[in-house]
Image: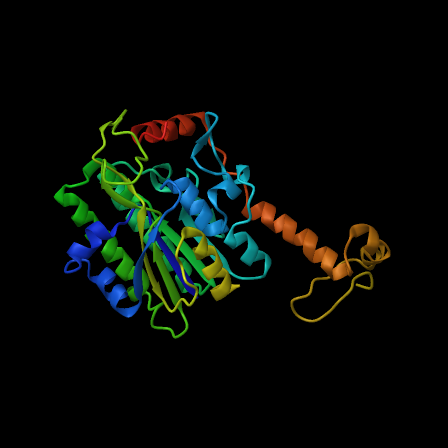
Length: 258
Length: 74
């Protein structure tokens, strides 16, 4: 089985200095290979997640925003085959949970209702997303499919609203705990031959620290505290294919599962 | 059950009359065998199911847009 865990907006800027409390990140770094993906494209979640699971560059898949011409873009508006479509046709058992290349996020092969339309914006919703994505993913892992993809979106919102505050590390710790349940609690990595890709779509930083500003500082919510950064995180375990850009994830999955 | 074609486990039965119609029109259907055609059609139907459209109500659309505005996407 290949397990792909996506953590929207996860950044080494928070993880590296806090590895003493992020014990499961630490354990994975020690057992696998940790690196960064430096995005060449603008760090927009819709485009990056789409490229990651279709293998196509933004100019090829053409999906660069959750909203196009005033309308919310849906799966069927994006004219690509995703890795789950291709592998399913090949007879592989594939499950994808809460993949946020569209809002509400997309799921494949499982019934999953995203929390807050995939844009959870308060503590209650952040906790609910953590719990529900974890529980559904554990349930799916127990079925033993060929590929499981699961994505958490909460850290993106938490960092937009609270970047620089102590609570950010506390939420990383909660994500770390759930990561431990998924990767170690299920025993998935104890089985020889199983593989893991842990990845974010972009990093995070204060305004002015990234090469390009992705979102405006002032919004309807008020003043955002941080913005997307071009450096995303990557940890792989037992994955041979080299991942240097988001699109490589598609090819890594095809090589490992297809 | 004479009007069906049978094989081992994992195979499904289809009426023999349907099998013959497909077999006579393989070139027209652009496939090399009846099995290939049946798999192709069933696969498309299953994809339709798994790609089922997520219908968004007007109320949900407004809620999503509000959240996107708060993040500066709109």
